[in-house]
Image 1 (tube, one colour):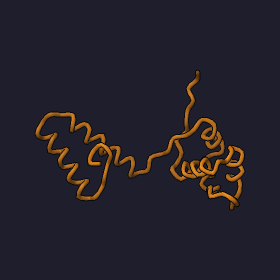
Image 2 (cartoon, one colour):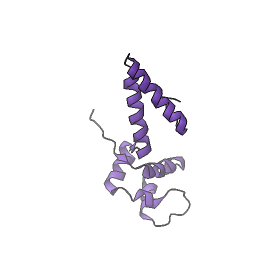
Image 3 (tube, helix red, strand yellow):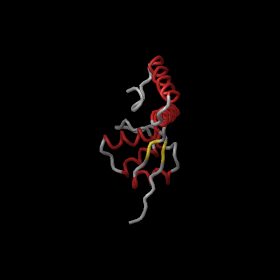
Image 4 (cartoon, one colour):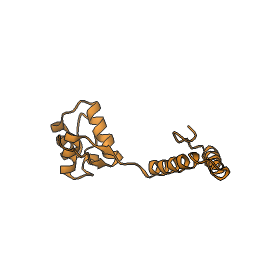
Amino acid sequence: MTNVSKPVIPAVVADALDQAKAERMSNESIIDVRNEEYPEGTRVSGAALRLIPFDTLLVALVNGYERELTEEERLYESIAGEYEWFSSCDSDYDDGVCRGIILTLNTLGIKIEGVNA
């Protein structure tokens, strides 16, 4: 079996493809929507589908795709990674860093899975 690579596509394009799947559109219909300026009868954004090269869209339709993380999601992953690293250590300093991270997130009203959610 060969390795099949899934392209990483922007969230707005992934949302459009997810909407197309929800509407049970065929790959051919998705390509048609991409080529239309104002597609009728669908909530799929043809403009969003044009944000990536045509060949990337084809690969995404055939092999699947991964959603590109937003800047906020990348930041959350980074914080979660730092928290995980410090929480695995057994010193008062590391414990203080973990408490500081949690206090800061709670104060800002931010919830991150695995940290304070």
